[in-house]
View 1: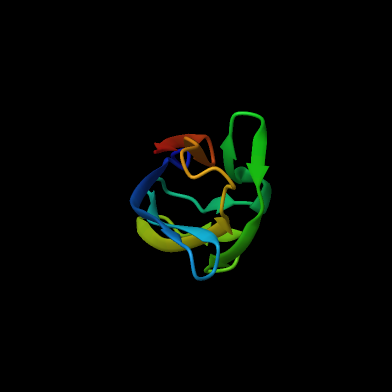
View 2 (view 1 turned 60 degrees about the vertical axis):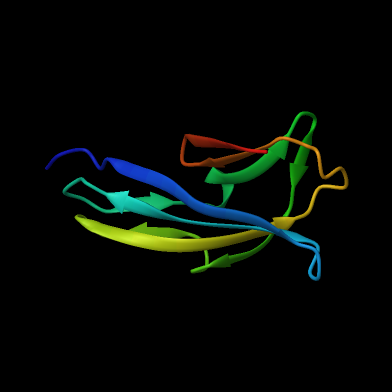
Length: 99
């Protein structure tokens, strides 16, 4: 079988001041012929010198994405204390900058 080839897409990012979290939503697409697994330690939100705690993930991690399917997700991380911080979301080697 072909090596699993996940693609990660970030669809939305916003700050929820009522809950003091950054909400990120997107999808993981599995273009391979075998299961793709994404573990909790493969999902991070960082800024220079800082890593933010994951508060919630829907669906719960770890994610298991079947071949030829798309998994939608929503992640909530603790909000940075400095709103002007540039954030970097990393999921299974895919990186996104959020300003």
